[in-house]
Structures are given as C-alpha cells and as structure tokens.
Image (cartoon, rainbow, N blue to C red; front, side, top):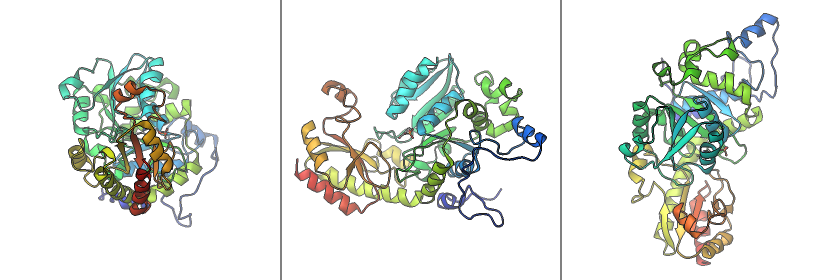
Length: 427
Ligand SMILES: *Cc1c(COP(=O)(O)O)cnc(C)c1O
C-alpha cells in the first residue's frame, strides 16, 4: 500500500475523485433516488450483495465522498455522516448497545451528550455511569459492569476544556473487552488523531471547526477498524450474529473491518434516518479544504489572547491547555503538540453583573451560542447555558459568576485583543 498523504493534502484531495470529463469539484447529488436498468441489478443492492446507490437515506455520492475524506483524515477504515453531532453520538451507542446494556462516560462532556446518555438512552434501557476523567485507573475501574459495552470521552471537553488521557481510557476499555469512543470535535484530526492512541471509534460534531463557518449542523462517525468484535462475540451480538432484517447477514463476516459502519448505515440509518442533506455535505467539504490553515490560526490566536487575559489584572484565571501552568498542559503536549483549539474560558474577578457589563461592551466579539467557527464569539454560562442554576449549583458545576467562554476566531489577534481590552475597561 502506498504511504497515506499528510492531513493538509487529504483535506484538499481525498474523497471525490473525478473520472475523465467529470466535474473537478464535488458535485451536489441532490437526488433522493438512483436509476437501474434491470430488476436484478437493483435486487442485488437490496440484498447487500453489491455496492451501489439506490436511496439517499442509505447512501448518497456527495455524502459518501465527504465521509471518505473524514475517514482518511482520522486514519480510519470507514465513516458515516449524520445530520448532527447529537445523531452521531446517539447512533454510535445504538450500534453497540441494546436495552439492558451499560456504558461508561467521562463526566466532562458536552451538555447535549450528558443529557443524551444520562436521560434519553436511559429511557431506552441503556444505563450510563459518569466518571471523573482525571480519576485513577483503579477508581474508574469500579464503574465497569458485566454488561458494559463501551467507554466514551471527549479529546477536549466542551465547555470544560479538560484534555482526555486517551491512552488511559483505551487501556481501561480494552481490559474490559469494549471499544473506546472519542468525540474529537474540538481537536479535529488536524491536531489529534485518537486512533493513534488506542481509541476505536471517533465521533464529530462537524458543525464546529470542520465546517468552520457556522453554515450547517452535521455529524460524523469514523471507525478505526481495529476493534476485534469477533473476539468479544457474546458482547456484540448485533455485529456478530445474523441480522434478520437484512437476510441474515452477519456484519463481521461479510464486511470485516467495515462491519461497524456498514451496520450503522444499513440498519440504523435505514430505520432512524438522520441523514445530512447533500447540500450540507457539500458545504462541509468546502470547510474541510481549509481546516489545517484555520486550526493553525485558531490556535495561534487563542494562545495570544489567552496570554493577554492571563496577564490582565481584572482576570482571575484562564482555562487553555496551550498555556504553561494550565492543569492540562502536559496532557495537551502529549496528545496535541501543535495546538488544541481556539476555544478557551476565563473568569473575571467580581460579580455576575461585572461579567454582563463586560459582555455587553464587546464590539467585535459577538454573543452567540455557537463555538468553533471563523468569527470570535463569547458566551456567559451563568446567564446563558447554566442560567437556571443558583450560586451554589454554579460553584459545584465549576462555573464562577465571572466565567466567560471565548471562541477565538481567525480575525487579526490584535483586533480581538483590543476589543477585549476596551470591554475590560468598562468593568
Ligand atoms: C456541539 C457538540 C456536539 C453536538 O453536536 P451538534 O452538531 O450540535 O448536534 C457534540 N459533541 C461536542 C463535543 C460538541 O461540541
């Protein structure tokens, strides 16, 4: 096999490979369905005997080209796009678990993931134990049960900005015969490829840096192809025993290293249907072409902004794993030596009202819920995402009254810093 290209090249070149006379740029196959000449030709597709397009809920050429690019970027064997990051994280669990099963998840995860795993999958009979990601292996060990089917964490947690010790979590998962799933949204495969550290499956909210321009909500699941489902045959009957809804196909037998993604597509997408529109996948692909350039700029800007804030007398503390002295600096050096991401958080000294005055004085940095796109934006957890909590609950959640989440964009760092400086003067 030839040596794989480097990420910058993959971002531009992987996925869509035009044949003679075909469009150079990935076309938007805005078609629900695909035509065949004979009954048998289409029959072979329904029997999963041949690969081909027949209905966009299952597969679409635009979506597949972009999935292939992301799989190549992560160093995986196959990928599936979903309509959102939430759908990606739900499908990953649904592809492994059924009622009566259990997962272990880092307590430092995205709020939507926390709700999904603590409340929604619980109603479907799948239990989740949340663990402190910084606890010792022995402590985390205690969370495993006989019916545990997966371990989950985020490379850089949104919004806690903690860095996951991927190797520690991979070792724990593998010692219990289950895969490690890593949500790699904030780091992106440009800064970290979790498969290189033992993760088995990676998920993304492509809504963030991959799209990078806040244009389209989307998600992706990538499989490394490394987990040996057959070796844990009894744990994963969905992959290792006949699927009666698909003519008794055994995914591991028929699809080998692509078993996980084929099952997710053929079974879950067929039945649950959270596909992205080809138009959104086209936009995602345009975003991916510049991902390495943007990540470099996001990181260098965040470093500059973080250093400015850290030195400012009105700032209490800054959370940014690229800054020396941050509790996650060493882990970030190990897993993301080139940089983490553009999102940081910091706390103003003073009251909630001071933070509100600061926020409302910003001119360039916009108040939006989104993070991780080209435009710098801010959010005040005590007023926004954590608004329903009282002072004591806020403290328990690690949210100080003055905490501000800042997603540093790709504008001039001098303009961003000048805006922050003038707003700090108003406090
Ligand atoms: C935003 C986000 C999600 C959810 O993704 P959507 O595309 O908004 O559904 C999941 N995980 C992480 C880490 C996120 O930042």
